[in-house]
Length: 219
Image (cartoon, rainbow, N blue to C red; front, side, top):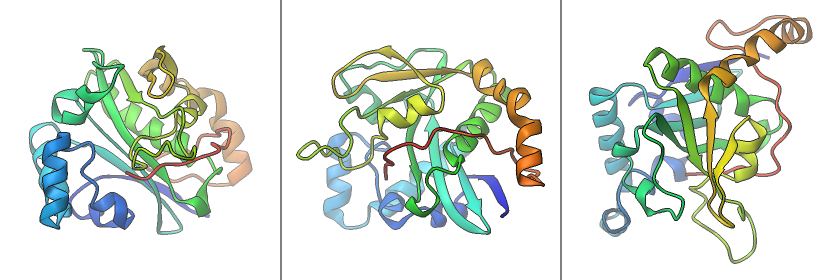
């Protein structure tokens, strides 16, 4: 089984699940997002946001592929590029952190370590750019009946399972943080064991073991 990580580009954007490809929950403020949905093609706004962020800031997402099939993705950016980031009760994001907005693992591939693989790919990228931490807003009630948030806020359990710590508690939307030096230390701890287990590794990124998350998000 071959697994690899690639950066989000306008080409790989098309490999996001269709609901995520058209979702502008994070990319626009609530009023603008509703207008985009009413206009009928929020996918154009998503593409414009990715294009602008790539041009002005750089890589803003990672996709995981298993045997050539899209299996999951994460997206991230400075809070200033994410209008929705100020709409949470646990805002604002810390000044030294980038915001991981959304994460999704295709159900078929859940529980196989892709969640940690994606987060470590983000950590390597951001460390090279001088950023010290990743923060995220998690949904502590993801999947609960009557508590839907459009699936665009990833479960708090997911972030906790890949090493994030809660820095501002909240019954619904805690803010969580991962110090990048912690994420990068995973390599030395598990690389040898994984090589023996899997036989060969993708040159673009090592897999990392992760306790299977009970739920995944789309957004």
